[in-house]
Length: 89
Image 1 (cartoon, rainbow, N blue to C red):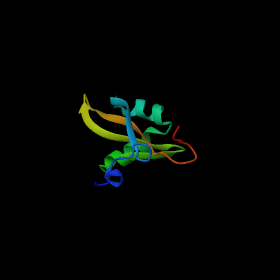
Image 2: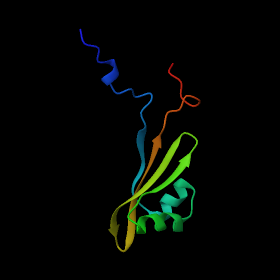
Image 3: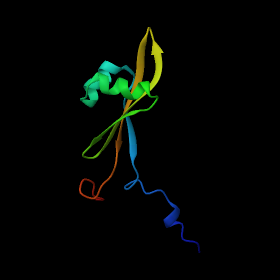
């Protein structure tokens, strides 16, 4: 009998991305992530997502579209399970 345990995805150790807001303005994203608008714009101008580390994961802000001259972005939080924050019950 083959043991597939080593090939299975373990959801308790894999990062999990959760969308917080989709298609919002950079101003709204800055409020959610608690950073300046200019820091987000700086990364987006370089065609890179804005990333900010937090205790349990990473905030991600990335560009999706433009509407009426405004840049629309998606905001997500990627939970990174760590032993000191996450415990298997």
